Length: 301
Image (cartoon, rainbow, N blue to C red; front, side, top):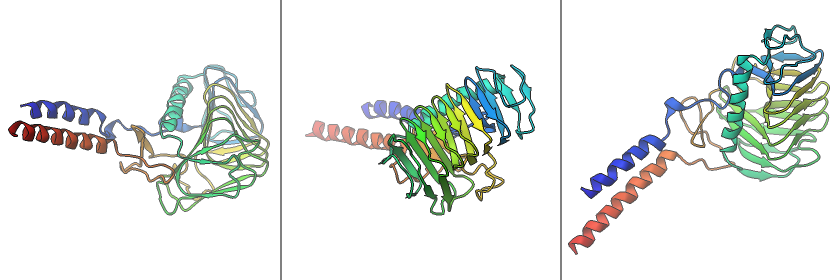
């Protein structure tokens, strides 16, 4: 009877804490995934920029350099989507951005790197990058090793800063891949930098003249986004991921600190071992059974 009593709460725990694909949501879910640029206070643009996706701000309303009407959704020839000035769509996306940053932080610190990533070739993984005067002074190569669902997460506890003309080059991956820069304060992508991936910054993001994000987003949680004749695309043009979410991270879910692709398979990230939550529950069952058996043996003795 004691064993039965013990098994019931453990079974309930397995249901409660085991991975549930039905509850999984992407790191960037709808409508956040429709935004190429999102700010909290303002989004300022020095025309002309080329934006594939929506541009929005909330709870602020000002988007100088774009066609906008305060509190409304507007069309602009620089934007393939819409310009959202403190609309319900932008407000919802801002709430999701805060959640997305917390989700990325839950994946841990991974492998710690120096401040400047230039000259490195990195396999999929979770990496923490030290603060410095620049985090990229040349070319960073991200090699997916043939994994279509490759995932890179860069935890930037302080700032993200690139030097002029820097390059992020992504190779050997596919349509389910994700690239995220989780920035603890502000990001500055300097002139003519060719960048890739989603920048999720706590405060502000600045893209200097002619900097590009070939596949990704500039998403500022509490501050402003400043653009100067930039190209930003969620459509992944020019990265070999056309027609898919690609590096935008579509299909990458996180449940209980474990990253999974859209098939529910745990994503391999060499920068950190990601345990299966269900494994811990099974271990608990085994331990409970062992204790019960031991008690019975001792009672007979």
